[in-house]
Image (cartoon, rainbow, N blue to C red; front, top):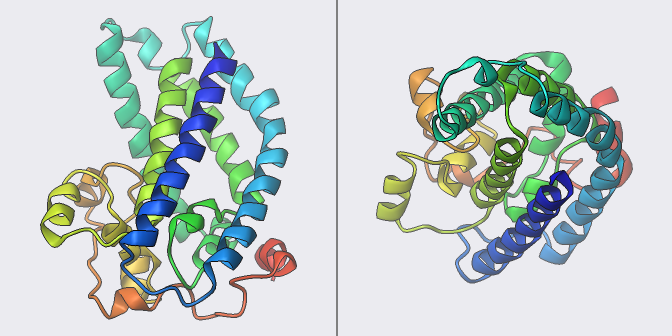
Length: 257
Protein backbone atom coordinates (compact mmCIF):
# COMPACT_ATOMS: atom_id res chain seq x y z
CA UNK A 1 0.00 0.00 0.00
CA UNK A 2 2.78 2.44 0.93
CA UNK A 3 4.59 1.76 -2.34
CA UNK A 4 1.39 2.50 -4.31
CA UNK A 5 0.73 5.73 -2.42
CA UNK A 6 4.36 6.82 -2.75
CA UNK A 7 4.23 6.24 -6.51
CA UNK A 8 1.01 8.27 -6.68
CA UNK A 9 2.75 11.08 -4.81
CA UNK A 10 5.58 11.10 -7.37
CA UNK A 11 3.14 11.07 -10.30
CA UNK A 12 1.17 14.02 -8.90
CA UNK A 13 4.41 15.85 -8.14
CA UNK A 14 5.75 15.54 -11.69
CA UNK A 15 2.45 16.16 -13.49
CA UNK A 16 1.48 19.23 -11.47
CA UNK A 17 5.00 20.65 -11.75
CA UNK A 18 4.81 20.38 -15.54
CA UNK A 19 1.35 21.95 -15.51
CA UNK A 20 2.56 24.96 -13.49
CA UNK A 21 5.61 25.24 -15.75
CA UNK A 22 3.36 25.50 -18.80
CA UNK A 23 0.81 27.87 -17.25
CA UNK A 24 3.44 30.33 -16.00
CA UNK A 25 4.99 30.33 -19.48
CA UNK A 26 1.77 31.75 -20.93
CA UNK A 27 0.58 33.88 -18.01
CA UNK A 28 3.68 35.19 -16.19
CA UNK A 29 3.38 37.78 -13.46
CA UNK A 30 7.04 38.88 -13.56
CA UNK A 31 9.60 38.96 -16.35
CA UNK A 32 12.38 36.45 -15.72
CA UNK A 33 15.66 38.13 -14.76
CA UNK A 34 17.70 34.97 -15.42
CA UNK A 35 17.43 32.35 -18.14
CA UNK A 36 14.63 29.89 -17.44
CA UNK A 37 16.64 26.97 -18.80
CA UNK A 38 19.33 27.77 -16.21
CA UNK A 39 16.77 27.90 -13.43
CA UNK A 40 15.17 24.62 -14.51
CA UNK A 41 18.54 22.90 -14.81
CA UNK A 42 19.95 24.20 -11.52
CA UNK A 43 16.87 23.58 -9.40
CA UNK A 44 16.23 20.28 -11.19
CA UNK A 45 19.73 19.10 -10.23
CA UNK A 46 19.10 20.09 -6.61
CA UNK A 47 15.79 18.19 -6.64
CA UNK A 48 17.50 15.10 -8.05
CA UNK A 49 20.25 15.15 -5.40
CA UNK A 50 17.73 15.76 -2.62
CA UNK A 51 15.45 12.96 -3.85
CA UNK A 52 18.28 10.42 -3.92
CA UNK A 53 19.52 11.36 -0.45
CA UNK A 54 16.02 11.55 1.07
CA UNK A 55 15.29 7.95 0.08
CA UNK A 56 17.23 6.86 3.18
CA UNK A 57 15.26 8.73 5.88
CA UNK A 58 12.05 7.91 4.03
CA UNK A 59 12.76 4.18 4.00
CA UNK A 60 14.30 3.88 7.46
CA UNK A 61 12.51 6.56 9.51
CA UNK A 62 9.24 7.87 8.05
CA UNK A 63 7.80 4.67 6.56
CA UNK A 64 8.58 2.56 9.70
CA UNK A 65 6.91 5.26 11.84
CA UNK A 66 3.78 5.11 9.64
CA UNK A 67 3.73 1.30 9.87
CA UNK A 68 4.05 1.42 13.66
CA UNK A 69 1.14 3.86 13.91
CA UNK A 70 -0.90 1.71 11.51
CA UNK A 71 -0.55 -1.28 13.85
CA UNK A 72 -0.80 0.47 17.22
CA UNK A 73 -2.92 2.87 19.23
CA UNK A 74 -0.34 5.63 19.50
CA UNK A 75 -1.31 9.22 18.90
CA UNK A 76 -4.30 11.50 19.25
CA UNK A 77 -6.39 10.17 16.37
CA UNK A 78 -6.11 6.55 17.51
CA UNK A 79 -7.68 7.55 20.81
CA UNK A 80 -10.63 9.45 19.33
CA UNK A 81 -13.97 7.70 19.02
CA UNK A 82 -14.95 9.14 15.66
CA UNK A 83 -15.39 7.86 12.13
CA UNK A 84 -12.56 7.83 9.60
CA UNK A 85 -13.75 10.99 7.85
CA UNK A 86 -13.74 13.09 11.03
CA UNK A 87 -10.36 11.69 12.07
CA UNK A 88 -8.96 12.42 8.63
CA UNK A 89 -10.24 16.01 8.67
CA UNK A 90 -8.77 16.61 12.12
CA UNK A 91 -5.51 14.99 11.06
CA UNK A 92 -5.19 17.15 7.94
CA UNK A 93 -5.89 20.34 9.88
CA UNK A 94 -3.38 19.42 12.59
CA UNK A 95 -0.72 18.65 9.98
CA UNK A 96 -1.28 21.98 8.25
CA UNK A 97 -1.15 23.82 11.58
CA UNK A 98 2.05 21.99 12.49
CA UNK A 99 3.70 22.91 9.20
CA UNK A 100 2.73 26.53 9.72
CA UNK A 101 4.73 26.45 12.96
CA UNK A 102 7.57 24.47 11.39
CA UNK A 103 7.91 27.14 8.70
CA UNK A 104 7.76 29.89 11.31
CA UNK A 105 10.44 28.18 13.40
CA UNK A 106 12.65 27.97 10.31
CA UNK A 107 12.54 31.76 10.15
CA UNK A 108 12.79 32.64 13.84
CA UNK A 109 15.47 30.25 15.15
CA UNK A 110 18.88 31.03 13.69
CA UNK A 111 20.05 27.39 13.43
CA UNK A 112 17.08 26.46 11.25
CA UNK A 113 17.27 29.72 9.29
CA UNK A 114 20.81 28.82 8.19
CA UNK A 115 19.32 26.01 6.11
CA UNK A 116 15.99 27.59 5.15
CA UNK A 117 17.64 30.81 3.96
CA UNK A 118 19.02 28.84 1.00
CA UNK A 119 15.45 28.72 -0.29
CA UNK A 120 15.19 32.51 0.02
CA UNK A 121 18.43 33.20 -1.84
CA UNK A 122 16.48 32.88 -5.07
CA UNK A 123 16.11 36.38 -6.52
CA UNK A 124 13.21 35.34 -8.71
CA UNK A 125 10.16 33.22 -7.94
CA UNK A 126 8.68 30.54 -10.17
CA UNK A 127 7.66 26.91 -9.92
CA UNK A 128 11.31 25.79 -9.92
CA UNK A 129 11.78 27.64 -6.61
CA UNK A 130 9.58 24.93 -5.07
CA UNK A 131 12.51 22.54 -5.65
CA UNK A 132 15.04 24.79 -3.93
CA UNK A 133 15.47 23.37 -0.41
CA UNK A 134 18.73 22.54 1.32
CA UNK A 135 19.21 18.86 2.17
CA UNK A 136 19.85 19.86 5.79
CA UNK A 137 16.40 21.41 6.02
CA UNK A 138 14.80 18.33 4.47
CA UNK A 139 16.56 16.00 6.94
CA UNK A 140 15.43 18.14 9.88
CA UNK A 141 11.94 18.16 8.38
CA UNK A 142 11.96 14.34 8.35
CA UNK A 143 12.56 14.27 12.10
CA UNK A 144 9.75 16.76 12.56
CA UNK A 145 7.42 14.62 10.41
CA UNK A 146 8.15 11.49 12.47
CA UNK A 147 7.30 13.35 15.68
CA UNK A 148 3.99 14.45 14.10
CA UNK A 149 3.20 10.91 12.97
CA UNK A 150 3.52 9.62 16.54
CA UNK A 151 1.84 12.59 18.24
CA UNK A 152 -1.14 12.77 15.89
CA UNK A 153 -1.32 9.05 15.08
CA UNK A 154 -1.86 9.88 11.43
CA UNK A 155 -2.96 7.02 9.11
CA UNK A 156 -0.70 6.19 6.18
CA UNK A 157 -3.25 7.19 3.53
CA UNK A 158 -3.97 10.56 5.15
CA UNK A 159 -0.29 11.37 5.62
CA UNK A 160 0.51 10.63 1.96
CA UNK A 161 -2.61 12.55 0.86
CA UNK A 162 -1.44 15.59 2.83
CA UNK A 163 2.04 15.26 1.33
CA UNK A 164 0.52 15.26 -2.17
CA UNK A 165 -1.61 18.36 -1.47
CA UNK A 166 1.34 20.06 0.23
CA UNK A 167 3.66 19.51 -2.75
CA UNK A 168 1.00 20.73 -5.20
CA UNK A 169 0.33 23.81 -3.05
CA UNK A 170 4.08 24.43 -2.83
CA UNK A 171 4.38 24.34 -6.62
CA UNK A 172 1.30 26.51 -7.12
CA UNK A 173 2.16 29.30 -4.71
CA UNK A 174 5.79 29.52 -5.87
CA UNK A 175 4.75 29.69 -9.52
CA UNK A 176 5.08 32.89 -11.55
CA UNK A 177 1.40 32.99 -12.49
CA UNK A 178 -0.53 36.23 -12.92
CA UNK A 179 -3.92 35.46 -11.40
CA UNK A 180 -6.72 37.99 -12.00
CA UNK A 181 -7.22 40.22 -8.96
CA UNK A 182 -10.73 38.96 -8.20
CA UNK A 183 -9.70 35.31 -8.47
CA UNK A 184 -6.68 35.90 -6.25
CA UNK A 185 -8.74 37.78 -3.66
CA UNK A 186 -11.24 34.92 -3.48
CA UNK A 187 -8.68 32.13 -3.37
CA UNK A 188 -6.41 33.66 -0.74
CA UNK A 189 -9.29 33.79 1.70
CA UNK A 190 -8.78 30.03 1.89
CA UNK A 191 -5.49 28.93 0.32
CA UNK A 192 -2.03 30.32 -0.34
CA UNK A 193 -1.81 31.89 -3.80
CA UNK A 194 1.26 32.96 -5.81
CA UNK A 195 0.74 36.62 -4.87
CA UNK A 196 0.17 35.72 -1.22
CA UNK A 197 3.42 33.76 -1.06
CA UNK A 198 5.42 36.28 -3.09
CA UNK A 199 4.96 38.58 -0.08
CA UNK A 200 6.97 36.02 1.88
CA UNK A 201 9.90 36.15 -0.57
CA UNK A 202 10.42 39.91 -0.66
CA UNK A 203 13.67 41.48 0.52
CA UNK A 204 11.50 43.55 2.86
CA UNK A 205 11.90 41.81 6.22
CA UNK A 206 8.46 42.78 7.51
CA UNK A 207 6.62 40.70 4.92
CA UNK A 208 9.32 38.02 4.58
CA UNK A 209 9.05 37.16 8.26
CA UNK A 210 5.30 36.62 7.93
CA UNK A 211 2.91 34.71 5.66
CA UNK A 212 4.04 31.28 6.88
CA UNK A 213 1.06 29.20 5.73
CA UNK A 214 1.65 26.21 3.46
CA UNK A 215 -1.87 25.38 2.27
CA UNK A 216 -4.62 27.08 4.27
CA UNK A 217 -4.32 30.80 5.02
CA UNK A 218 -6.36 30.61 8.20
CA UNK A 219 -3.26 30.15 10.40
CA UNK A 220 -1.73 33.50 9.45
CA UNK A 221 -5.04 35.11 10.35
CA UNK A 222 -5.33 33.32 13.69
CA UNK A 223 -1.75 34.11 14.74
CA UNK A 224 -1.64 37.61 13.18
CA UNK A 225 1.25 36.85 10.83
CA UNK A 226 -0.21 38.05 7.55
CA UNK A 227 1.59 41.00 5.97
CA UNK A 228 0.82 42.38 2.53
CA UNK A 229 3.67 43.85 0.48
CA UNK A 230 2.96 46.26 -2.36
CA UNK A 231 3.50 45.62 -6.07
CA UNK A 232 6.90 47.33 -6.11
CA UNK A 233 8.14 45.34 -3.12
CA UNK A 234 7.03 42.12 -4.79
CA UNK A 235 9.43 42.83 -7.67
CA UNK A 236 12.48 42.77 -5.37
CA UNK A 237 12.81 39.20 -4.14
CA UNK A 238 15.43 37.22 -2.25
CA UNK A 239 17.91 38.34 0.41
CA UNK A 240 20.44 41.15 0.60
CA UNK A 241 23.20 38.77 -0.53
CA UNK A 242 22.36 38.31 -4.21
CA UNK A 243 25.51 36.43 -5.20
CA UNK A 244 24.41 32.92 -4.23
CA UNK A 245 21.34 32.39 -6.39
CA UNK A 246 23.23 29.82 -8.47
CA UNK A 247 26.34 27.73 -7.91
CA UNK A 248 26.04 24.25 -6.50
CA UNK A 249 28.94 24.61 -4.05
CA UNK A 250 27.67 27.98 -2.80
CA UNK A 251 24.27 26.38 -2.40
CA UNK A 252 25.38 23.50 -0.18
CA UNK A 253 28.00 25.51 1.76
CA UNK A 254 25.74 28.46 2.56
CA UNK A 255 24.53 27.19 6.00
CA UNK A 256 28.18 26.98 7.11
CA UNK A 257 29.01 30.53 6.04
